[in-house]
Amino acid sequence: MKKIKAFPWLYLCNYILIACFCQLFSITLFAQNDPKGLPFITNYRYQEYNGDGVNWWAAEDDKGIMYFANERGILVFDGQRWELVRPPGISETRAIAKGKDGKMYVATNGDIGYLAPDKKGKLQFISLKDKLPENKRNFGIVWEAVVLNDGNIMFRSNNRLLIWDYKAFKILESEEGFHVGGAIGDQYYCRI
Image (cartoon, rainbow, N blue to C red; front, side, top):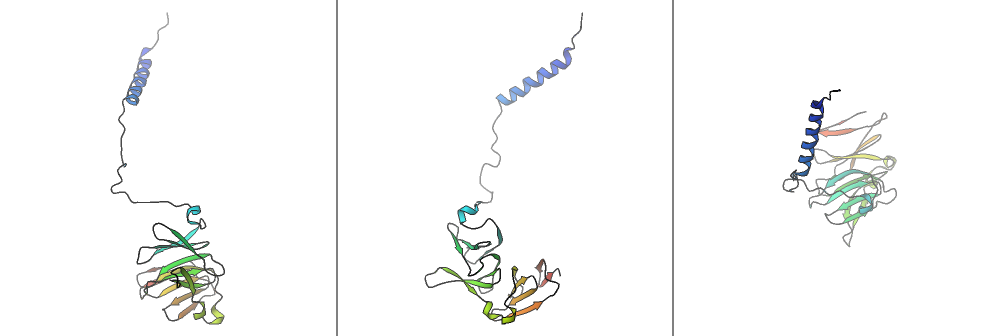
């Protein structure tokens, strides 16, 4: 006569019975279902805002309107509606910064300017390229716009730093090129 070891089978049956009991009589938990204290986040697909899927930079003005540097131009979002402002020429926009005068300064592929409403109130791109000497107007892609501690805006292209003091540009050039940088306190640091 063969002996059957019932002890392992007993553990297995008890385990299955307890698992089934827990599944049948479990209480639904509502963790994090209450929206209090959670941030309000809405994700938008690029098809919804009629732009490209790549947004390089974002900035907010004094009225809470959001501006995004997009491959197709400058996206403006007032909380309900999207508007696309296309700079003339190549509309590929890389950087946006809010100046001390409250204007939104924009850097594109080959141009620098700001946004201002026209007579009908529609935002337009106003170029500042004519404020540069003629031999300095071909600067390529501007990758970064930073508001410095003194309020001036610095635009970084591959080989030039263009500093706008709201009247004229000061230009710093490098043959090695300017790479990733950032402002810390009252200093701007850049990898060369």
